[in-house]
Length: 457
Image 1 (tube, rainbow, N blue to C red):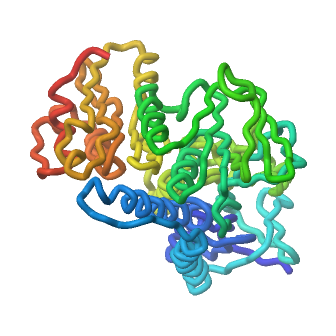
Image 2 (cartoon, rainbow, N blue to C red):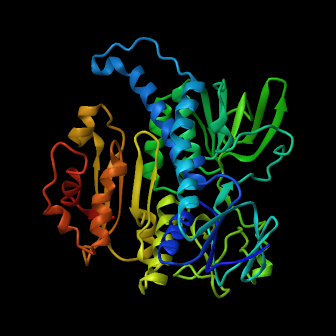
Image 3 (cartoon, rainbow, N blue to C red):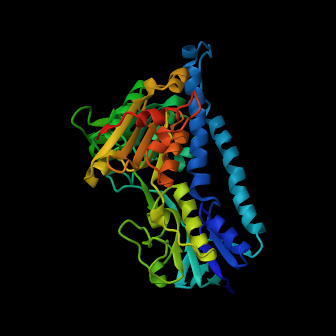
Protein backbone atom coordinates (compact mmCIF):
# COMPACT_ATOMS: atom_id res chain seq x y z
CA UNK A 1 0.00 0.00 0.00
CA UNK A 2 1.64 3.25 -1.17
CA UNK A 3 0.63 6.55 0.39
CA UNK A 4 1.94 10.03 -0.37
CA UNK A 5 2.30 12.85 2.16
CA UNK A 6 3.94 16.25 2.45
CA UNK A 7 5.92 15.12 5.50
CA UNK A 8 6.73 11.98 7.45
CA UNK A 9 7.55 12.27 11.13
CA UNK A 10 9.24 9.19 12.62
CA UNK A 11 8.90 8.97 16.39
CA UNK A 12 6.34 10.38 18.83
CA UNK A 13 8.69 11.72 21.49
CA UNK A 14 8.94 15.37 22.49
CA UNK A 15 9.65 16.92 19.08
CA UNK A 16 7.65 14.65 16.78
CA UNK A 17 4.03 15.18 17.89
CA UNK A 18 4.45 18.95 18.26
CA UNK A 19 5.92 19.15 14.76
CA UNK A 20 3.18 16.93 13.31
CA UNK A 21 0.48 19.14 14.83
CA UNK A 22 2.13 22.35 13.62
CA UNK A 23 2.61 21.08 10.07
CA UNK A 24 -0.90 19.63 9.89
CA UNK A 25 -2.45 22.88 11.08
CA UNK A 26 -0.46 24.65 8.35
CA UNK A 27 -2.21 22.44 5.78
CA UNK A 28 0.52 19.83 5.25
CA UNK A 29 -0.53 16.19 4.89
CA UNK A 30 1.46 14.48 7.63
CA UNK A 31 2.22 10.86 8.49
CA UNK A 32 3.60 10.14 11.97
CA UNK A 33 5.08 6.76 12.83
CA UNK A 34 5.49 5.32 16.33
CA UNK A 35 6.43 1.73 17.01
CA UNK A 36 5.79 1.50 20.74
CA UNK A 37 4.90 4.17 23.32
CA UNK A 38 3.55 7.57 22.35
CA UNK A 39 5.22 10.38 24.26
CA UNK A 40 8.73 8.99 24.02
CA UNK A 41 11.25 8.68 26.83
CA UNK A 42 10.14 11.73 28.81
CA UNK A 43 6.54 10.64 29.24
CA UNK A 44 7.08 6.89 29.59
CA UNK A 45 10.48 6.08 31.07
CA UNK A 46 12.18 9.42 31.77
CA UNK A 47 11.11 12.72 33.27
CA UNK A 48 7.50 12.02 34.18
CA UNK A 49 7.80 8.61 35.88
CA UNK A 50 11.15 9.25 37.56
CA UNK A 51 10.15 12.63 38.99
CA UNK A 52 6.91 11.11 40.25
CA UNK A 53 8.99 8.50 42.09
CA UNK A 54 11.46 11.13 43.30
CA UNK A 55 8.48 12.90 44.86
CA UNK A 56 7.50 9.70 46.70
CA UNK A 57 11.08 9.29 47.92
CA UNK A 58 11.13 12.92 49.10
CA UNK A 59 7.92 12.37 51.05
CA UNK A 60 9.47 9.37 52.82
CA UNK A 61 12.62 11.36 53.56
CA UNK A 62 10.69 14.27 55.06
CA UNK A 63 8.57 11.91 57.15
CA UNK A 64 11.73 10.37 58.62
CA UNK A 65 13.01 13.88 59.36
CA UNK A 66 9.77 14.86 61.09
CA UNK A 67 11.43 15.38 64.47
CA UNK A 68 13.71 18.03 62.89
CA UNK A 69 10.59 20.13 62.37
CA UNK A 70 8.85 19.28 65.64
CA UNK A 71 6.64 16.67 64.01
CA UNK A 72 6.22 13.05 65.08
CA UNK A 73 5.55 10.91 62.00
CA UNK A 74 6.19 7.49 63.51
CA UNK A 75 7.88 4.60 61.68
CA UNK A 76 8.09 5.13 57.92
CA UNK A 77 7.58 2.25 55.50
CA UNK A 78 7.51 2.52 51.72
CA UNK A 79 5.17 0.35 49.65
CA UNK A 80 6.95 0.17 46.28
CA UNK A 81 3.89 -1.35 44.64
CA UNK A 82 1.86 1.73 45.65
CA UNK A 83 4.66 4.04 44.50
CA UNK A 84 4.62 2.32 41.11
CA UNK A 85 0.83 2.54 40.90
CA UNK A 86 0.97 6.29 41.57
CA UNK A 87 3.66 6.69 38.93
CA UNK A 88 1.70 4.67 36.37
CA UNK A 89 -1.44 6.70 37.05
CA UNK A 90 0.49 9.88 36.23
CA UNK A 91 2.14 8.47 33.11
CA UNK A 92 -0.86 6.85 31.43
CA UNK A 93 -2.97 9.99 30.80
CA UNK A 94 0.00 11.75 29.22
CA UNK A 95 0.77 8.85 26.88
CA UNK A 96 -2.88 8.36 25.97
CA UNK A 97 -3.32 12.08 25.43
CA UNK A 98 -0.40 12.29 23.00
CA UNK A 99 -1.76 9.45 20.87
CA UNK A 100 -5.37 10.67 21.03
CA UNK A 101 -4.36 14.16 19.96
CA UNK A 102 -2.44 12.88 16.95
CA UNK A 103 -5.21 10.53 15.81
CA UNK A 104 -7.76 13.34 16.03
CA UNK A 105 -5.59 15.91 14.23
CA UNK A 106 -6.91 16.84 10.80
CA UNK A 107 -4.38 16.16 8.00
CA UNK A 108 -2.43 13.77 10.24
CA UNK A 109 -2.32 9.97 9.81
CA UNK A 110 -0.85 7.74 12.52
CA UNK A 111 1.08 4.56 11.67
CA UNK A 112 2.27 2.06 14.26
CA UNK A 113 5.32 -0.06 13.56
CA UNK A 114 9.04 0.17 12.88
CA UNK A 115 10.07 2.62 10.17
CA UNK A 116 12.89 1.94 7.72
CA UNK A 117 14.08 3.93 4.72
CA UNK A 118 13.83 2.39 1.26
CA UNK A 119 14.98 5.62 -0.42
CA UNK A 120 15.61 9.21 0.71
CA UNK A 121 11.90 9.98 0.30
CA UNK A 122 10.23 6.64 1.08
CA UNK A 123 9.78 4.78 4.35
CA UNK A 124 8.41 1.30 4.91
CA UNK A 125 6.19 0.65 7.96
CA UNK A 126 4.91 -2.91 7.92
CA UNK A 127 2.91 -3.31 4.70
CA UNK A 128 2.64 0.45 4.16
CA UNK A 129 5.02 2.41 1.94
CA UNK A 130 5.04 6.10 2.83
CA UNK A 131 6.46 8.75 0.52
CA UNK A 132 7.18 12.43 1.23
CA UNK A 133 9.70 15.12 0.24
CA UNK A 134 10.32 15.95 3.92
CA UNK A 135 11.24 13.39 6.60
CA UNK A 136 11.76 14.29 10.26
CA UNK A 137 13.50 11.75 12.48
CA UNK A 138 12.68 11.89 16.19
CA UNK A 139 13.52 8.31 17.15
CA UNK A 140 15.02 9.00 20.59
CA UNK A 141 17.43 6.87 22.57
CA UNK A 142 17.50 3.97 25.00
CA UNK A 143 19.68 2.99 28.00
CA UNK A 144 23.16 1.91 26.94
CA UNK A 145 24.37 -1.54 27.95
CA UNK A 146 28.16 -1.54 28.20
CA UNK A 147 30.20 -4.51 27.03
CA UNK A 148 31.55 -5.30 30.49
CA UNK A 149 32.41 -8.88 31.48
CA UNK A 150 29.39 -10.82 32.74
CA UNK A 151 26.75 -8.52 31.29
CA UNK A 152 25.49 -11.28 28.96
CA UNK A 153 24.93 -13.80 31.75
CA UNK A 154 23.83 -11.73 34.75
CA UNK A 155 20.39 -10.15 35.23
CA UNK A 156 20.57 -6.36 35.48
CA UNK A 157 18.28 -3.36 35.53
CA UNK A 158 18.25 -0.29 33.31
CA UNK A 159 16.57 3.07 33.89
CA UNK A 160 13.59 1.61 32.00
CA UNK A 161 13.18 -1.77 33.68
CA UNK A 162 13.78 -0.50 37.22
CA UNK A 163 10.53 1.46 36.90
CA UNK A 164 8.60 -1.82 36.84
CA UNK A 165 9.87 -3.13 40.20
CA UNK A 166 7.17 -3.78 42.77
CA UNK A 167 9.39 -5.27 45.48
CA UNK A 168 12.10 -3.19 47.09
CA UNK A 169 15.67 -4.37 46.35
CA UNK A 170 17.49 -5.45 49.48
CA UNK A 171 20.76 -4.05 48.14
CA UNK A 172 20.93 -2.06 44.91
CA UNK A 173 24.26 -1.43 43.22
CA UNK A 174 24.18 1.50 40.81
CA UNK A 175 26.92 1.48 38.17
CA UNK A 176 27.44 5.06 37.01
CA UNK A 177 26.93 8.42 38.70
CA UNK A 178 25.55 10.67 36.02
CA UNK A 179 22.08 12.16 36.42
CA UNK A 180 20.27 8.82 36.05
CA UNK A 181 22.51 6.91 38.45
CA UNK A 182 22.40 9.61 41.12
CA UNK A 183 18.63 10.03 40.98
CA UNK A 184 17.89 6.32 41.31
CA UNK A 185 20.54 5.80 43.99
CA UNK A 186 19.06 8.43 46.29
CA UNK A 187 15.49 7.44 45.43
CA UNK A 188 15.93 3.78 46.37
CA UNK A 189 17.94 4.60 49.46
CA UNK A 190 15.02 6.71 50.64
CA UNK A 191 12.63 3.90 49.78
CA UNK A 192 14.63 1.71 52.18
CA UNK A 193 17.17 -0.22 50.10
CA UNK A 194 20.84 -0.49 50.90
CA UNK A 195 22.55 1.34 48.03
CA UNK A 196 26.10 1.37 46.68
CA UNK A 197 27.27 3.56 43.80
CA UNK A 198 30.12 2.29 41.64
CA UNK A 199 31.78 4.97 39.53
CA UNK A 200 34.72 4.55 37.17
CA UNK A 201 35.83 8.16 37.54
CA UNK A 202 37.59 9.47 40.62
CA UNK A 203 34.49 11.36 41.80
CA UNK A 204 30.72 11.29 41.61
CA UNK A 205 29.01 13.44 38.97
CA UNK A 206 32.24 13.56 36.95
CA UNK A 207 30.78 15.88 34.31
CA UNK A 208 30.03 18.58 36.88
CA UNK A 209 32.42 20.95 38.65
CA UNK A 210 34.44 19.46 41.50
CA UNK A 211 32.63 21.55 44.12
CA UNK A 212 29.34 20.01 42.96
CA UNK A 213 30.80 16.51 43.21
CA UNK A 214 31.87 17.21 46.79
CA UNK A 215 28.37 18.29 47.79
CA UNK A 216 26.81 15.24 46.11
CA UNK A 217 29.13 13.01 48.10
CA UNK A 218 28.29 14.87 51.32
CA UNK A 219 24.55 14.50 50.71
CA UNK A 220 24.76 10.84 49.76
CA UNK A 221 27.10 9.91 52.58
CA UNK A 222 24.78 11.62 55.06
CA UNK A 223 21.93 9.45 53.77
CA UNK A 224 23.94 6.23 54.11
CA UNK A 225 24.75 5.59 50.45
CA UNK A 226 28.05 3.76 49.98
CA UNK A 227 30.37 5.18 47.33
CA UNK A 228 33.04 3.30 45.38
CA UNK A 229 34.71 5.78 43.04
CA UNK A 230 37.80 5.18 40.91
CA UNK A 231 36.49 1.71 40.07
CA UNK A 232 38.35 0.02 37.21
CA UNK A 233 37.70 -3.30 35.48
CA UNK A 234 34.05 -3.46 36.58
CA UNK A 235 32.48 -6.87 35.93
CA UNK A 236 29.32 -8.75 36.92
CA UNK A 237 29.03 -12.22 38.42
CA UNK A 238 25.86 -14.22 39.10
CA UNK A 239 25.45 -15.73 42.58
CA UNK A 240 22.81 -17.88 44.26
CA UNK A 241 21.35 -14.88 46.08
CA UNK A 242 21.72 -12.20 43.42
CA UNK A 243 24.58 -10.41 41.76
CA UNK A 244 28.19 -9.65 42.61
CA UNK A 245 29.96 -6.65 41.12
CA UNK A 246 33.71 -7.03 40.88
CA UNK A 247 35.91 -3.97 40.69
CA UNK A 248 39.39 -2.65 41.30
CA UNK A 249 39.65 0.44 43.50
CA UNK A 250 42.44 2.08 45.46
CA UNK A 251 40.58 1.03 48.60
CA UNK A 252 37.68 -1.23 49.58
CA UNK A 253 36.76 -4.85 48.92
CA UNK A 254 37.21 -6.18 45.35
CA UNK A 255 33.67 -7.61 45.26
CA UNK A 256 30.27 -6.26 46.32
CA UNK A 257 27.33 -8.63 46.71
CA UNK A 258 23.85 -7.29 45.99
CA UNK A 259 20.33 -8.36 45.16
CA UNK A 260 20.04 -6.03 42.15
CA UNK A 261 22.33 -4.01 39.90
CA UNK A 262 21.35 -0.96 37.85
CA UNK A 263 23.45 -0.05 34.83
CA UNK A 264 23.29 3.74 34.43
CA UNK A 265 26.09 4.46 32.01
CA UNK A 266 24.53 6.60 29.31
CA UNK A 267 22.16 6.22 26.39
CA UNK A 268 22.26 4.90 22.82
CA UNK A 269 20.30 6.53 19.95
CA UNK A 270 17.62 4.38 18.29
CA UNK A 271 19.04 4.73 14.78
CA UNK A 272 20.23 1.19 14.08
CA UNK A 273 17.07 -0.11 12.39
CA UNK A 274 16.25 2.93 10.22
CA UNK A 275 18.24 1.54 7.26
CA UNK A 276 19.95 4.91 7.01
CA UNK A 277 22.09 3.78 4.07
CA UNK A 278 19.01 3.79 1.83
CA UNK A 279 18.52 7.48 2.66
CA UNK A 280 22.10 8.40 1.90
CA UNK A 281 22.83 8.97 5.59
CA UNK A 282 25.26 7.33 8.00
CA UNK A 283 25.29 7.54 11.80
CA UNK A 284 28.49 8.58 13.54
CA UNK A 285 30.56 6.25 15.74
CA UNK A 286 28.13 6.74 18.63
CA UNK A 287 24.99 6.13 16.55
CA UNK A 288 23.94 9.79 16.26
CA UNK A 289 22.74 11.31 12.99
CA UNK A 290 24.90 14.37 12.18
CA UNK A 291 22.99 17.60 11.56
CA UNK A 292 23.85 21.22 10.82
CA UNK A 293 22.94 24.21 12.95
CA UNK A 294 19.36 24.11 11.66
CA UNK A 295 18.98 20.35 12.21
CA UNK A 296 19.27 19.43 8.52
CA UNK A 297 21.07 16.20 7.68
CA UNK A 298 23.36 15.77 4.70
CA UNK A 299 20.45 14.38 2.65
CA UNK A 300 18.14 17.05 1.24
CA UNK A 301 14.74 17.07 2.95
CA UNK A 302 15.71 14.90 5.96
CA UNK A 303 16.00 16.38 9.44
CA UNK A 304 16.95 14.80 12.79
CA UNK A 305 15.47 16.10 16.04
CA UNK A 306 15.81 15.19 19.71
CA UNK A 307 18.09 12.61 21.28
CA UNK A 308 19.07 10.96 17.99
CA UNK A 309 21.04 13.97 16.72
CA UNK A 310 23.47 14.24 19.64
CA UNK A 311 22.82 17.96 20.05
CA UNK A 312 21.09 17.96 23.41
CA UNK A 313 19.66 14.82 24.95
CA UNK A 314 17.06 16.63 27.08
CA UNK A 315 13.31 17.10 26.77
CA UNK A 316 13.74 20.86 26.62
CA UNK A 317 16.33 20.64 23.83
CA UNK A 318 14.14 18.23 21.86
CA UNK A 319 11.21 20.62 22.09
CA UNK A 320 13.49 23.47 21.04
CA UNK A 321 14.52 21.36 18.03
CA UNK A 322 10.84 21.30 17.03
CA UNK A 323 10.60 25.07 17.43
CA UNK A 324 13.70 25.64 15.30
CA UNK A 325 12.52 23.41 12.45
CA UNK A 326 8.88 24.57 12.49
CA UNK A 327 9.64 28.28 12.56
CA UNK A 328 12.33 28.01 9.91
CA UNK A 329 10.06 26.06 7.57
CA UNK A 330 6.76 27.81 8.18
CA UNK A 331 7.58 31.31 9.40
CA UNK A 332 10.66 32.16 7.38
CA UNK A 333 12.77 32.33 10.54
CA UNK A 334 16.46 31.55 10.81
CA UNK A 335 16.69 29.93 14.21
CA UNK A 336 19.71 27.81 15.09
CA UNK A 337 20.81 25.24 17.64
CA UNK A 338 23.77 27.46 18.51
CA UNK A 339 21.35 30.15 19.72
CA UNK A 340 20.41 28.14 22.80
CA UNK A 341 22.28 28.18 26.08
CA UNK A 342 23.18 24.96 27.83
CA UNK A 343 20.86 24.24 30.77
CA UNK A 344 20.38 21.10 32.85
CA UNK A 345 19.14 19.90 36.21
CA UNK A 346 19.88 16.71 38.11
CA UNK A 347 16.87 15.88 40.26
CA UNK A 348 18.56 14.62 43.33
CA UNK A 349 17.55 16.30 46.58
CA UNK A 350 18.55 19.07 46.72
CA UNK A 351 18.45 19.57 42.94
CA UNK A 352 21.59 20.52 41.05
CA UNK A 353 20.87 23.02 38.26
CA UNK A 354 23.47 24.51 35.93
CA UNK A 355 23.40 26.87 32.94
CA UNK A 356 26.02 28.10 30.51
CA UNK A 357 29.68 27.28 30.96
CA UNK A 358 31.19 25.30 33.81
CA UNK A 359 34.16 26.66 35.75
CA UNK A 360 36.47 24.30 33.85
CA UNK A 361 35.10 25.49 30.51
CA UNK A 362 35.60 29.11 31.55
CA UNK A 363 39.21 28.40 32.55
CA UNK A 364 39.90 26.71 29.23
CA UNK A 365 38.59 29.78 27.45
CA UNK A 366 41.71 31.60 28.60
CA UNK A 367 40.11 34.97 29.38
CA UNK A 368 40.01 36.55 32.85
CA UNK A 369 36.83 35.68 34.70
CA UNK A 370 35.19 36.29 38.06
CA UNK A 371 33.21 33.95 40.28
CA UNK A 372 30.72 34.57 43.03
CA UNK A 373 29.72 31.84 45.49
CA UNK A 374 27.34 31.66 48.41
CA UNK A 375 26.70 28.52 50.46
CA UNK A 376 23.11 27.53 51.16
CA UNK A 377 23.98 27.78 54.84
CA UNK A 378 23.79 31.56 54.21
CA UNK A 379 20.43 31.49 52.40
CA UNK A 380 17.53 32.17 54.75
CA UNK A 381 15.01 30.17 52.73
CA UNK A 382 17.23 27.09 52.86
CA UNK A 383 17.78 27.49 56.59
CA UNK A 384 14.05 27.87 57.23
CA UNK A 385 13.34 24.69 55.25
CA UNK A 386 16.13 22.78 56.99
CA UNK A 387 17.82 22.09 53.64
CA UNK A 388 21.25 23.73 53.70
CA UNK A 389 23.33 21.48 51.45
CA UNK A 390 24.69 23.21 48.34
CA UNK A 391 25.53 26.66 47.05
CA UNK A 392 24.92 29.37 44.46
CA UNK A 393 27.71 30.07 41.98
CA UNK A 394 27.84 32.57 39.12
CA UNK A 395 30.66 32.99 36.57
CA UNK A 396 31.22 36.38 34.92
CA UNK A 397 33.57 37.71 32.24
CA UNK A 398 35.97 40.06 34.04
CA UNK A 399 36.03 42.59 31.19
CA UNK A 400 32.53 42.63 29.67
CA UNK A 401 30.68 41.58 32.86
CA UNK A 402 28.74 39.09 30.70
CA UNK A 403 27.32 36.18 32.70
CA UNK A 404 29.10 33.06 31.47
CA UNK A 405 27.38 30.42 33.56
CA UNK A 406 25.83 29.61 36.88
CA UNK A 407 24.91 26.87 39.30
CA UNK A 408 22.18 26.75 41.90
CA UNK A 409 22.72 23.56 43.88
CA UNK A 410 20.17 23.56 46.63
CA UNK A 411 16.51 23.65 47.54
CA UNK A 412 14.51 25.21 44.72
CA UNK A 413 17.60 25.40 42.55
CA UNK A 414 15.86 23.96 39.48
CA UNK A 415 13.51 26.97 39.51
CA UNK A 416 15.84 29.71 40.77
CA UNK A 417 18.41 28.98 38.05
CA UNK A 418 16.08 30.55 35.47
CA UNK A 419 16.87 34.00 36.87
CA UNK A 420 20.42 33.54 35.63
CA UNK A 421 19.37 31.84 32.39
CA UNK A 422 16.92 34.58 31.43
CA UNK A 423 19.54 37.27 32.02
CA UNK A 424 21.92 35.33 29.79
CA UNK A 425 19.37 35.07 26.98
CA UNK A 426 18.72 38.81 27.30
CA UNK A 427 22.47 39.33 26.75
CA UNK A 428 22.51 41.59 29.77
CA UNK A 429 25.50 42.16 32.08
CA UNK A 430 25.57 40.89 35.64
CA UNK A 431 24.44 44.32 36.85
CA UNK A 432 20.93 43.52 35.58
CA UNK A 433 20.62 41.02 38.41
CA UNK A 434 22.50 43.02 41.03
CA UNK A 435 20.05 45.88 40.44
CA UNK A 436 17.00 43.61 40.57
CA UNK A 437 14.77 43.40 43.63
CA UNK A 438 13.68 39.82 44.30
CA UNK A 439 11.04 38.53 46.69
CA UNK A 440 12.05 37.63 50.24
CA UNK A 441 12.35 34.94 51.45
CA UNK A 442 13.43 32.99 48.37
CA UNK A 443 16.53 31.27 47.12
CA UNK A 444 16.59 33.48 44.01
CA UNK A 445 16.89 36.67 46.07
CA UNK A 446 20.46 35.71 46.96
CA UNK A 447 21.61 35.53 43.32
CA UNK A 448 22.11 39.33 43.17
CA UNK A 449 23.98 39.19 46.49
CA UNK A 450 26.23 36.45 45.09
CA UNK A 451 27.07 38.69 42.15
CA UNK A 452 28.02 41.56 44.47
CA UNK A 453 30.90 39.51 45.84
CA UNK A 454 32.83 38.47 42.74
CA UNK A 455 36.45 37.30 42.95
CA UNK A 456 38.97 36.17 40.32
CA UNK A 457 38.28 32.59 39.21
